[in-house]
Length: 141
Image (spheres, one colour):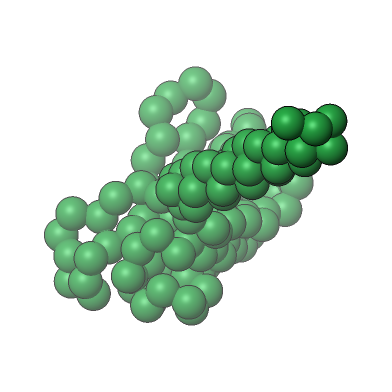
């Protein structure tokens, strides 16, 4: 065998190895897990006066469920979260919304967060928590 044939065989086997590695990498990327896309946002005033009412709104979406619902939760101090209000059930692709009018009965810090629930149908009795916003604080003075 001449020297040119040896170099040609080595170069060809190197190309085959590179093409095989690229093919394997593309298959691995294609079979990786798909992550759902979505977001949830909450809006509340930073301060409120005792005896006055204020508005807390939230909206969110998620493409992991057929139907969505957004709920607001609140707490004061270090207590557990309690459901305040829930919006209407909407189909995937629509923006789920909720609005709550809250009356500030006494002073202190109140925390609010929004939760997006996924449902299998418009009357599903077992919603699944999909996303939760970070808490926002309203200081009542």
